[in-house]
Length: 59
Image 1 (cartoon, helix red, strand yellow):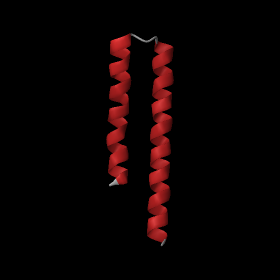
Image 2 (tube, rainbow, N blue to C red):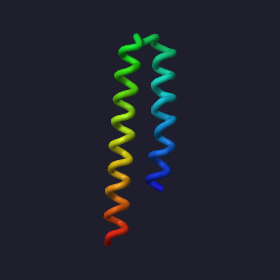
Image 3 (tube, rainbow, N blue to C red):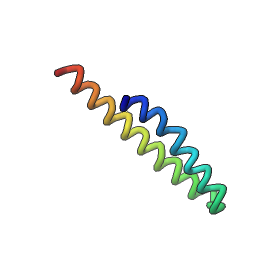
Image 4 (cartoon, rainbow, N blue to C red):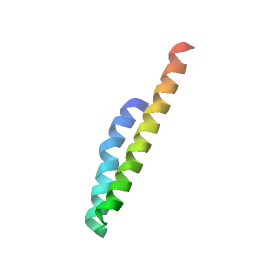
């Protein structure tokens, strides 16, 4: 379930970035920073899920 949640979070993060970009007309640099931030969050989530799954399967 947690892995599925992470997969669902990816389009949600990008949708939020797209929505914010459309609503507030951020510059391209700010959008780039937001996408990098979102990617870092996604990678961190996937890392945590991987760690939890590894711990779960080992025990």
